[in-house]
Image (cartoon, rainbow, N blue to C red; front, side):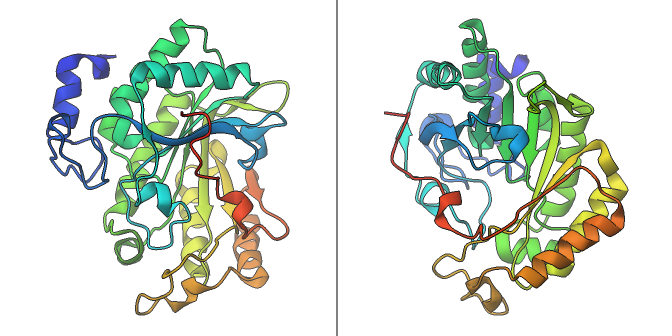
Length: 311
């Protein structure tokens, strides 16, 4: 648990090397990193969230904490008010620990930490404080998948489950859509580390995941071949050691389809496109797979950014 010592905190955040970009910002001295974040935790919402996968949200909801800013640059981001605009409130580590405990009191199945990489030292400290105060529900590290395996190893023991995205296997597409050309290789190494920490998935009597890795993949309009390649890689590398969620909830945002060569991002995913990807999962023999049915490309999957649970 050396991650939480003052010297290690300084080493990781000043100059900053928490994520694969290693941007070097002096965040403890007020500078912002590539992600836009300073050293103090900033969060936009903390509330029961019912729109995660069934093994995460269950019947009572996940205790989701949405952190402000992001280390990716996805041109189609559905939470851009948080990730790019940085909406939210700065809070202390002690207050964050109190938020975790309050979500547990409200009945949350887990603490769902959404995009926390750039605040990892204070978030881990808050988990430690919350556990001392009685936090018993699992902690879920919910991320875009652009993580440093080295840093994740330093945080071992703080997270019971990992829920990373695996967005791309093609460097060029990752560069064009998320400004992260090394995303494929970086995310694979990160997920390897996540699985090494959790081992095979474990569930409680209510079907709620207590340990394990659940990989999410958002199908993008016009890019079914990439999605099918992602599933093939998952099958070859991890098989049924991980759970997979194939999402069709892509919701076009203003300007997403304006980049040359990516006009299809201005529309939703078609049933035919999504069906092809699901069929590929079946062909590959993947059995631990969640799929979405019906019309999910709607704003109900985009949380209200209203400061609930933070202020």
